[in-house]
Length: 181
Image (cartoon, rainbow, N blue to C red; front, side, top):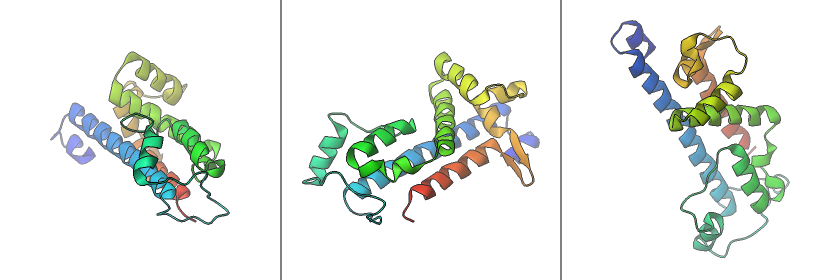
C-alpha cells in the first residue's frame, strides 16, 4: 500500500482507511481470540497444567455457561483488557492465564484499545484520549497525530517498521503469552 501511495496510485485518504481497517480487523480478531480461549478453558477443551490454570466453577451445560457469562447481554466485552481480567478472576483461580500479563503488556493493550476507540468512534472524547494516552508528549509531525498517520509512522529503521507493524507483533506476542506453555 505504501508503494501504491508513493506511486500516487492511491490517495492519502485511501491509505489511511486501509491502515485503520486493518488495525480494527487485527484488534477484533484478538478480541475473538480472547473469547475463544476463555470459553475453551471453561469448557475444558483447552488443557493447561493444573499448576497454572484452574476453574473456579464447572458449568452444567454450554447453554448454562453462556447464560451465566452473558448475564442477559448479547455479547461479552474483552477490551479494555481489564474487562478480561475481571471476568477471568471470577471464573478462573487467580484469573490465570489472563491475569499473568505484566504491566508492560497491559500498557500496550491500553494503547491498542485507545487507538481502536479513536478509529472506531471518531468522537472528541476518543480523540482526546488518543492524544492524551498515546501521543502524550511525543514530538510528531502533524499528520502523525491522528490514528492512521500515527500507525503509518516509522518507529524503527533497522529493519524499517511502522507503528502498525509493531502493534500487530505485540498482539501476536501477547496472544502467545496467554497460550499453553
